[in-house]
Length: 177
Image (cartoon, rainbow, N blue to C red):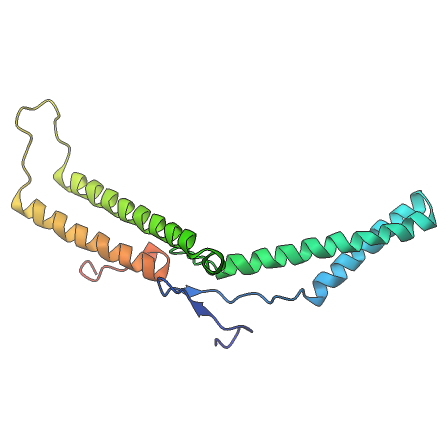
């Protein structure tokens, strides 16, 4: 448990990345006061424009406002529980684990395709522009192939770091420093 947060931080069950603290399930006193003030202002406007009895009846607006605030709080909790890296949703897993598994597999497939595309772009950048009209396209030199393999390894490390930490900027290449 961290020193400056009220709730403990959690780790994702799939990728073990750190999740933010989960908000409280209960509405805060401040939220209740805000709902009450909105209700009082609404009742006052209705009683001034129509009648006192209509203003009293309009105090029932508190109930839909309270339900809306509870629903928004539930959405905040659900969003905090979802992993931002692998998109694992524990509430969905509890409801339908097959669907949750399909979503995780789809995300991992997307990350794999993105990684392959990064490798292709890096290899084409290293190899240089090739002339598609030439009969014999230029072959990659051994040093360029080695560089491409090194780059592919770096990109793979970046992807692993992205999965673990949630962002590729946290990866640092120690060979270039």
